Amino acid sequence: MGKALIIGAGAIGRGFLPWALDGFDIDFFDVSQDLVSGIKNQGGYTTFRSLDGLLQEKWVQPSTITSDPDDLAFEAYDLAFAAVGPRNASKLDQRFGELRCPIFSLENDPKTVSTMVQILGKRDIFFGVPDVITSSTASPKNLAKDKFSIHTEDGVLYLSDDGHVSESARQLLARVEWSDESLMRKEWDAKLYLHNTPHCVAAYIGNLLGKTYVHEGFESDYLTEVVQGVIAEMLMSLKLLTTHDHYFLEEYATKELRRFSNPLLFDPISRVAREPLRKLQAGGRLTGALSMALLAGVRPHYTLLGIVSALRYLAPSDPDFLTMSNLRSFELQDFLAYHTGLSDSSLESRHIVQNFAGALATLERKLL
Amino acid sequence: MIDLIGDLVREYRLGRTEKVEALRTKGTNPRDVVTRLDMALHNVANEYVKRLHETTLLSEESEDLEESHQPRFTENLLVFDPLDGSNNFRLGLPSVACMGVLMKDSYLEEAFVIQFSESRYVHWRSNDNVAGNPLPAKGKDGAPYYLAYAPVESLGEAGKILVPEMHMALSRYGSGVYRDGSAGAAIYRCTESQYMGMVCVQVRIWDGLAALPILWSRGFRVAYKVEGLSISLVASSNYADFDNLLELFAKAGNPLSIFLPSEKLKI
Image 1: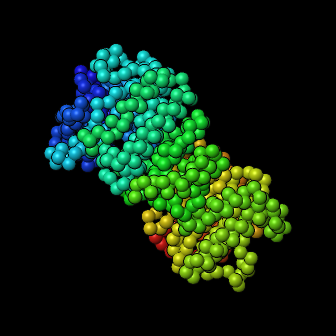
Image 2: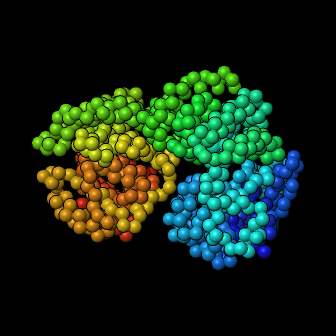
Image 3: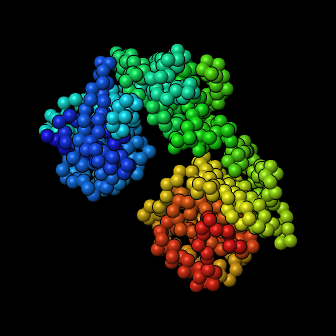
């Protein structure tokens, strides 16, 4: 049996990875002492996987779950995964640099690899793409039985392969897709623009509709139209701008709507929409998508509606709430320049500014 | 104050290429220029203050700063530097900032620094003690310090002793001493961990006051002394350096007080 360390017991770490690491003895590190002591006290937790319209159940019993890196035997692991959130990757405890095994960053941003290499002083850190939707919570019924339970879909874990993982560990990772750099780039582009972009747009528009879970928003025909529209714009842009196989892109795009609207996931809008400023950062999943569409000559009608709905996301519990509430104090191009890094002279900023009022009026007319 | 920040950012965007021209210089120092943008930003703050209840603007560009007209620090005050680094702005150099501090009854209520060239700002409010991203900043190993001081001819006795000593001390503690003409830009670089800290010796109050709460909120140790319209301060993310720098001020007969935002400013 292999041994793995999961740094960050959130959605991906706690919900999805135990399914991908079947056959591994798993330890967890998480900064939340409530989570750590709660799971420790009950001896484990349940992760539910949605497969073919049904929920499968798995009881996960960590050998160690801790908030103190000194409790971990750094030399004992075959693999480690960081799933702490892109903003937290730069705050990882330096002691994780003492791990003898490779670390895979599953942070939705390839730049986190170089950040972690620098912070941890460790070279064998690589990128991975968990192509999966995992909720940060579970259905009310399952939460009543286990408050740490979590729902995930049956996803695929892509890991960068440079021959740095031991053969014995690879054999245990039967469900992992090993990818070279070009394949990883293809998966990442597909995940970022065909999955993450429309997924967060569904959450922002669902928020405008007053919904709690992402799947509930799909009761609205207009939300469905917008999300389909974003997928179509991204699909066209990727076909025009990349050399990725068109069948692969088409196939990827086709399954997305079904994934987002899966009623078994209970994926909270507050999770998918969280930190809108990060998603609006230049090159991120929203303004990066806009750039790509503009560059490809694709009219980004629905993508813009997604950006405008993100700019209207005001959730008091969100880390970006205070800054987002400053939007009314700035002119739009200044807000974008000072909070997302989009220069007021950039094509993206000018497009958003010129079309903001019209897009907002469209959303209000269609949704409210 | 966020509305003021928004208005200032807008004014800078509109004037950054058209209001570079120097209108005049202050005193006999040709480097101490006042550009059209200084005045435009000053006017934005003036309009803002008019909307506040019984608040006086104490700005670098206020025209009547003779002793008899100086506002008292017990009043509600907006201490404001429209364009810290006007000469840099005129020359196209990037170290340019705008700073403001809102005071009520000698308590600091809010403070901000806008670093125009990088489209960034930091905004501190006393009710949540958070300035922008609330991570504590710590200067990276080998980071430099920033040093600012009044023109040599107007330094007091203590200042004349302190300036050469600070050059020596800061060169020892950090990887060098930066003096690039904008304390506001230096505050920002401290919050980004690019500087270990900053020292100001008898600079004008609008050049240094914003550093106190903003750097305190980022985990820096901060000490200061206000005399009339001048301020001396030490802020360091290295606590041993901080103690040593404070000792140098004390030895020069100019002891500083530890800054705590919960206390009235000692004036």
